[in-house]
Length: 256
Ligand code: NAP
Image 1 (cartoon, rainbow, N blue to C red):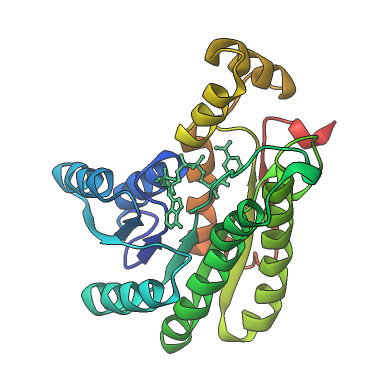
Image 2: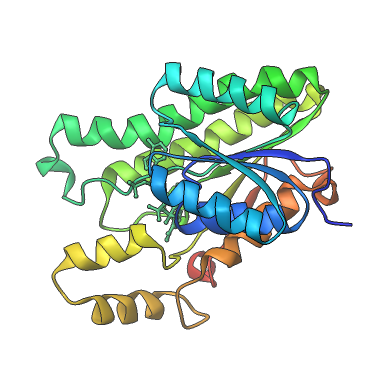
């Protein structure tokens, strides 16, 4: 018996990186998984991989910054799976990496649109399904950058700080509905998002990665699975008394 039997899960940004690891692990643990992303081909490929391994998954194109798209996709997911029990608000972008005084307003807005408004919209439209089912779990991907500062990615820091507190507010608002809301705060995890930062740095991918490794007391950056296992705990009933919490999975980055 898997840890997520009878659990209908929707994962945003599920085709790549952390979201992909979450979809694969959750399906192995018996969940019915709605893989959603703006990257359609990779999302469809992932669904085939999950099905080949005996899991239950389907793909929806879902841009979390579009309310129309969110409302429609969640309605279809609920119809197809028979409700929504767990939402993993994973989609996110790092966005522009400039000092604050050089950022264009449009660049700032883009990060907030995806990382903050996306979490708001998916939560807004998932909650009524969870209320109908008398409970649920919402897992928001914040970051170490939502806990501590660093001299880079100002808009990303702002967005992840917002997600940390949106999590606590929603935890309090929906505790009476038996809907738990928690945030996860990963350290650097080697995913396409971080690989792109490495390429954009101009210092060479290997050198960039070594520098990131050194920032984590455990000696290296993390892997997507490190985060997926934390999400698994928060999605399962094992965490039935956990809400409004911050699960830090960062190789000791913020312990210093
Ligand atoms: P990733 O490798 O870039 O994967 C994220 C996926 O989300 C991609 O497929 C991406 O598509 C998609 N996406 C982007 N905008 C979207 C939108 N508006 N609607 C739906 N999907 C969208 O990212 P990741 O590193 O796995 O990160 C996942 C989450 O963890 C993010 O919220 C990130 O901020 C957070 N996080 C990551 C790290 C890390 O070190 N990797 C650390 C802390 C927190 P495109 O590739 O086309 O953009």
